[in-house]
Image 1 (cartoon, one colour):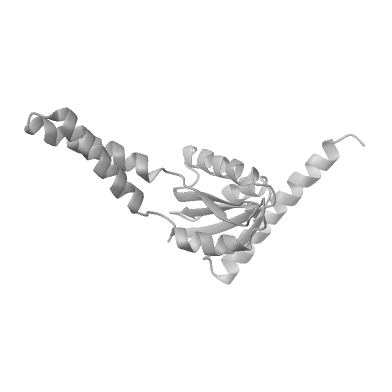
Image 2 (image 1 turned 90 degrees about the vertical axis):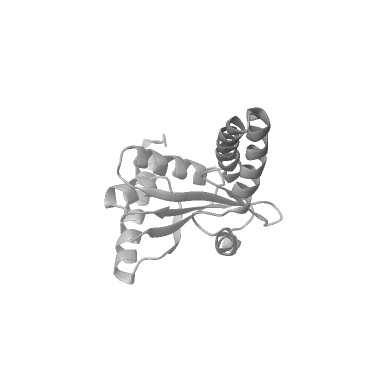
Length: 175
């Protein structure tokens, strides 16, 4: 079962750092990330989503490839590639994969101007090691799809890692 977590951050630059950490954990094969989106609230409290993957670009690349293939068949590869890129970009931009954008914007309405959140969907259960590393990046858990017992364990692990990180920073600073 996929796990869904939303972690809120006071500063807008903390969420992209946490997503970078999450993707680093994925490259270490510690977690299988399905989607990771950063939401930020601007000064007017409008929510902006920074997707993990730009669907317009992916659609354009796939469309250009298939347009080139079809174009080669009909001896017009450049026209085929251009048409395919345009159609692919349009289809990619209109499609939505991963976490639903409307849902993310609704949940992110709790953010105050200048705050951010990391929405993440992982395909497998996130281990304590993953949660500890994310906890070191700060923030607080806003929402999960876990049952009560699993969510309590997740919050406890996350908060302990966050507290330990704050304590080590406080001890390392000169008095």
